[in-house]
Image (cartoon, rainbow, N blue to C red; front, side, top):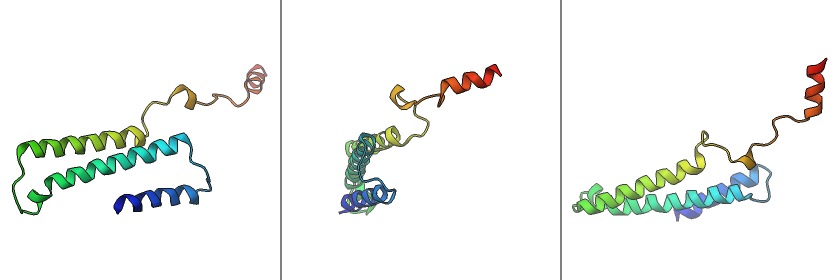
Length: 107
């Protein structure tokens, strides 16, 4: 099963990076990517007969496959887009030590 291989690869990646626990963000990414993978599988299943020239595929099935493809792309972009805006909790501090910064400007 391809999903199991991908899941094992993701887990191995996180383990090799020296992290023993998944953060909430890690779990969110894994869940979204697995969901997108399932949607891509549905898309393939829907259009496979036409791709293999076994039989024709009705227009409604093509539309359903397109919907699944677009849904997958949207889900992947949601968690993997480096340009997405950060939530306030992800901003961090702008300065390490505000007092030191103020002292530097006054001298």
